[in-house]
Length: 306
Image 1 (cartoon, helix red, strand yellow):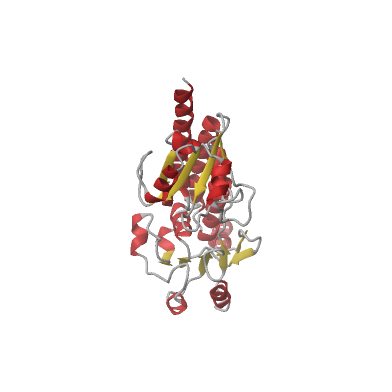
Image 2 (cartoon, one colour):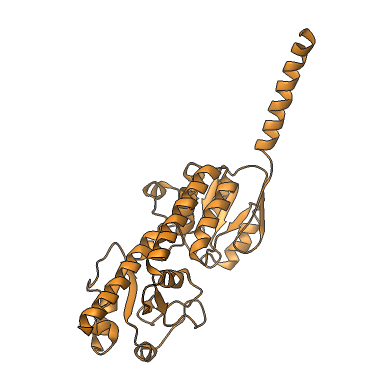
């Protein structure tokens, strides 16, 4: 027993050493560009360079590790208190350096390429976030949870999000199709093609993006092309929550063509852009609203037929 007792402290020390080594084992994930991102230990000081990234980081349980974010990072509310490091047009590189991040999460299409090259010169690990499909949001949560050391919270958020999307898909994806024109901007008239996540939401709701086959991701289209496509519903985004039939200038323009099916059937819809345009967990809420709008379009189709 005495000999055994002498080994107990050594066993405890070895166990603690192994646990410490495990806790600080390198973490490796693949970002949305296919690049490998490796951290020697879970990130402790994280900067977000896009509003959707900020939402993903908080949802993944990383709020306490956030030390900076770009403008318009306004959700959840506590994100509004984070130090600002610029916006999607210009980053404050000096402020970023001063905040001493050990991980920067970047939006490739929103942050200027020249400044991204400057960021690389800082030798701080960069994780590029560019979810293209609804299912990618859950994958992003899981990967960020690994980098942050918050996998239990991140995995729970990913599971809840997947459940929300699965419920909507089961309820609406096989409903009678509704042709949809999604209007990003009025002048020039811009839309989204089939590679954008909003198009994924339209499909989830049983809709069909009339310009899914165009290039680039955000193509400009003439008014005549919309009239020729004759969508059954026209959808746009607007600040704050809006209700069907809300009068918005960018939608009122279409009332000049009363024969357009979307106008004739009163299917001009506006949805809070933060819920629909940010590839983060709240897009499930935006999808719910779009699905309800397209269901309204189906109901009006029946009313007119009667």
